[in-house]
Length: 491
Image (cartoon, rainbow, N blue to C red; front, side, top):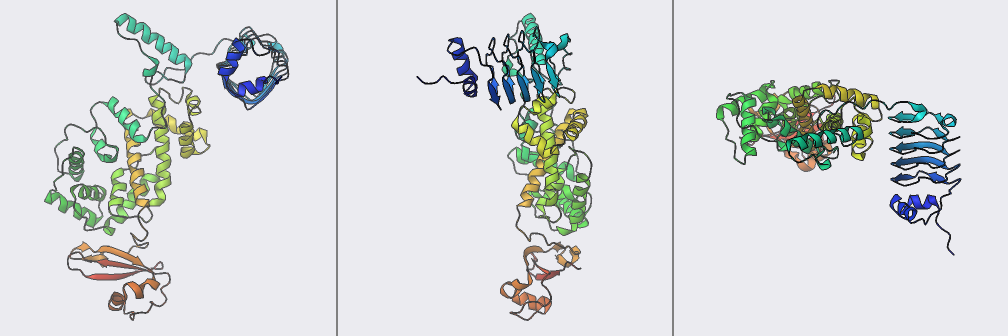
């Protein structure tokens, strides 16, 4: 006759099978000395069982029914017990050590005076030492949280009562705001944007997220206004028209490296006009990006028009290194937005929700690593911002990450490592077009004649003492003139 499976094996196979056998009285009631290691179980009926001297090592138990069970001299070490029912259980000589008790009920349990509690984290536990249940957490920021049982039941009860009075359909659990940190920033942005009302003008700065569009734009002829008009036209599946005067202003802004250089570059991109100047704007654009990255704010915004301009002008040097920081900020903004959407705030057991989702833990790790205090402080700052500001930060960071990721995939040599003045690259009042970057050993095979004409290097020979130099090959799109410019790290 085969040996009956032990309670350890049965629970490891799932609580449904255990409960089925328990209901049909096919399992024993005495399990003295049972040992459970890293058991993950929920909703198992252990009521009335003899579990004397049982050991529970690093177990994660949820909604377990221990009512009237004999747990005398049992040992719980590590792990987590959530929503477990110990009413009427015998806990004489029982030990709880280094574990978390969350919303467990010990009302009427026996032997509590001999219960040992060592390094136990208790949250909303009732019935121990006869203390009153702690006050409920504050109400959610919006809607009903799906993770806080007290809030959910209370709000659902209010909704049912109010709807019954009004004669409308009651709220349904499926209508509760979800906690979905696994959704991409674009989805979070789109859902939140519908609560803002009329889409603000800045949504046109993030065309990659396909936002809801403003109905009308204010009149004006600034490059920013013209850029947003062009984006709106394109997103409406129309072709933006180039304004000759605006194009001239944009080219001038790039040539001068002024404060409008970022908007100028993305405006020219939208209307399909090639920028005549590239390196002239590099210092301004890279300085703007660096200044935003250096702000000490976990969710600090990064202007996507600046990163978009760097992408359009193919200015990769000293830019891609900021991608990690921008990704970090986006992860934090994405996590905080999903928490607020589900009804959590920094004072409302948000860390419980955080630990309920693998996606949220990954975002937290990307944002602050293991520094939970920094994560809380960042959440406090983010939650205190106006809703539209929070939404703008999320959208700007998501668009900037996309731009920088595309920039990081550009081939090497797109931009010379060392920059000299733009005048050496100009012909016909525009910067000459970049063709390729070469090492000294590439000269004889690829540009021997040009090297002789420009640098006096005999054809077929490698330039002397140039092992560390970079040779930049450029060409004028108007007259076809070519140059070979030497870039030296010592220059």
